[in-house]
Amino acid sequence: VARSLVRLAKELGYETVVVDGRAAFATEARFPDVDRLVVGWPDEVADAIGLGPADAVAILSHDVKFDEPAITEALRRGCRYVGAVGSRKTQADRRARLLEAGVAADALDRLRGPIGLDLGGRLPAETALAIMAEIVAERRSGSGRPMRELARAREVARAGEAAAG
Image 1 (cartoon, rainbow, N blue to C red):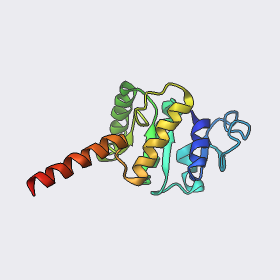
Image 2: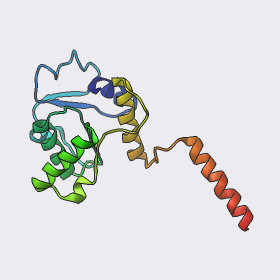
Image 3: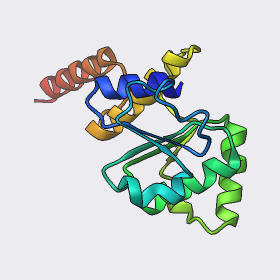
Image 4: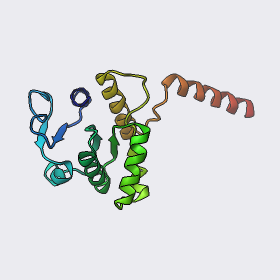
């Protein structure tokens, strides 16, 4: 998923940074399209990568000791999008642990998880597309609803205004 996400993000004009504490996974061979590859823990390298409010953070490791410090730091820095993989149960358990660790409930309300829009995909590239769709929708204030549905809603609203007018 991470490799597909980097490719899609790059295609959409995003600067891409991959951070992984495991040097065996943070390689140019695995991520040939990445702008910056950093071996380290996300919460420890946040200053070095300039993590801030304009950034979107997708946390994909499925590892509590890696994910939760990264989530905490991204929320603390006010990143505009913070998402993490995991089922609803994983998200609920994560939320309980983070609340217990002192992360404010209103900050946790900004965490996207399960990550991505429901596109029905199963393949890694489809999951990456769902994540990028949610990131773009957040960035551009999109609803994530089908365009056809929005057009129909506008038609109904116009018809109602015409009937009332």
